[in-house]
Length: 111
Length: 142
Image (cartoon, rainbow over all chains, first blue to last red; front, top):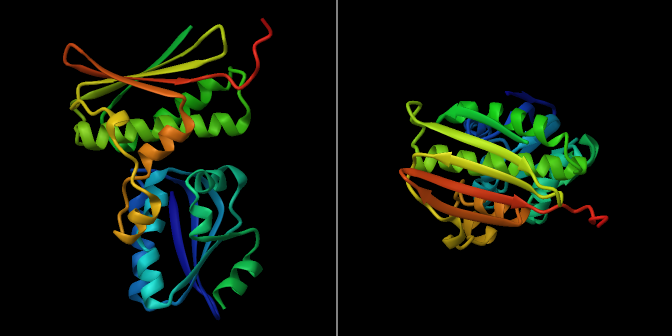
């Protein structure tokens, strides 16, 4: 699994490539933690190449929701395939974090 | 027919488990989404066993057997030497509580319970056995 981060004009984009499980979720944790430390307020997560996510990955996103709220950080996930999205749906997490089809929609959410 | 894999107890081996489960259940009458979710459920239980009951100890091993029944049900049997823990006794923590507490864990058991129809946990000698049953969603013709 590879995670990269790129500062764009208005947003900070984290791109995930591969599978997030109990072994690799620490890398996602590090990427989000670094974004917060850098003071990023508009975070997008490109999930186009995210093929799999287990509860360990979901848990990373969930564990930062309070920080996002407290620090006024907006985050949106985009380009997620239906199978991966179904994992968020099973636990009702789609009500807690924005998951949208396109990058343009994600940008509007964090504006 | 029974399909079996044995791995050392380390989370780096979870990918091997997922690949094995995917390969085996491809042969069964399950939709693509059902297959994906079953792989997830088995990944969750194995991760749980490896991390919390076997402490990522590679000198220990986890064995997974998959068997399909005549009625279309699929049985997953996970055997390891880790501590006994009956996830049926574990009350799922509401997601809102986990978020409030900033917890990273606690979602795996909820996922397993939502995907799998029944989970039996028992001891056999010094082994802990988890028997997970997924009933077929395809109506029987008989």
